[in-house]
Every structure is written in C-alpha cells, then in structure tokens.
Length: 56
Image (tube, rainbow, N blue to C red):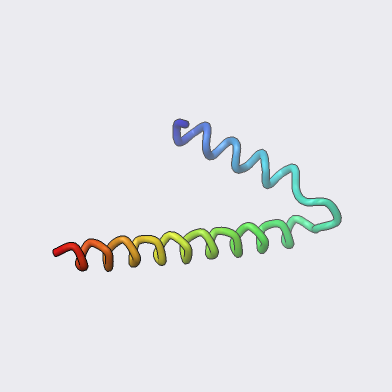
C-alpha cells in the first residue's frame, strides 16, 4: 500500500466513526489504539533482542 492510499484509508475510517461516539471520542480511541500498537511492538522488539543476545 502506498503512503497516499494508507492516509486516504485512515481518513476514511476516521470519517466513518464508531457508532454512538463523537468525533473527539473516535480520535481519542484511535490514539489509544496507536499507543497499544507501539507498546506491543516495543515488547516484541525487546524479546527479539533478548533472544538474539542469548544466541551469542
């Protein structure tokens, strides 16, 4: 997926919203999801790094 396609799709999803949530609530929920994603990614990278050190 190209950057523009990704951006357009993300904006489309934000515009669709989530049932019974205001635009501000949707944006807040999106920020929380991004935070969770980044946290999980850091954990996976740390585990992979620790496993790499164990092999040495």
